[in-house]
Image 1 (cartoon, one colour):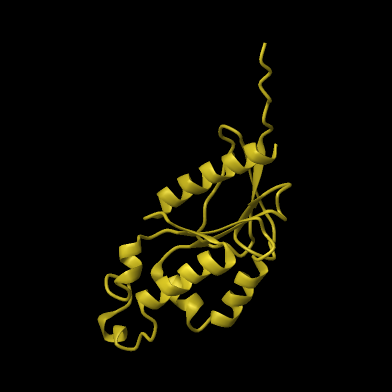
Image 2 (image 1 turned 135 degrees about the vertical axis):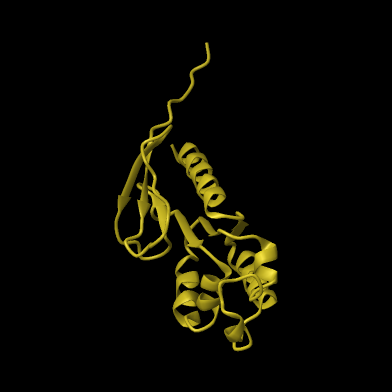
Length: 162
């Protein structure tokens, strides 16, 4: 007779500064979500706060701001991610969206010539985060797919640790 281990449910923590993010309600193994200040990242799981760090980027424009005028603060966040065993940057856009930046964005045509950061530079930085800092970069395509990816990731991490 085989014994199947019952995996407990989990609760998502969403950072208080996370503006347009995801809402986790009670479903399957997820008990729901609490909102509290996280020092690093946008999402984690109760009990795994020291192991799991998820950073969300909604658009290439947001990433450009993080790697441009807000670079110092963003690189500090990347550095704070170092001790986490499981660290991810979930991108709610495609690789094509990134590489073509600033084309096909909400940036007005008149402003595009003033943009000092390229999609190829942002890709270089993301690949460096992945190779040098072991941060998983996940191009999800859109917000819905990013939510599905995060939900599945949390379920797998919960199973792994419980």
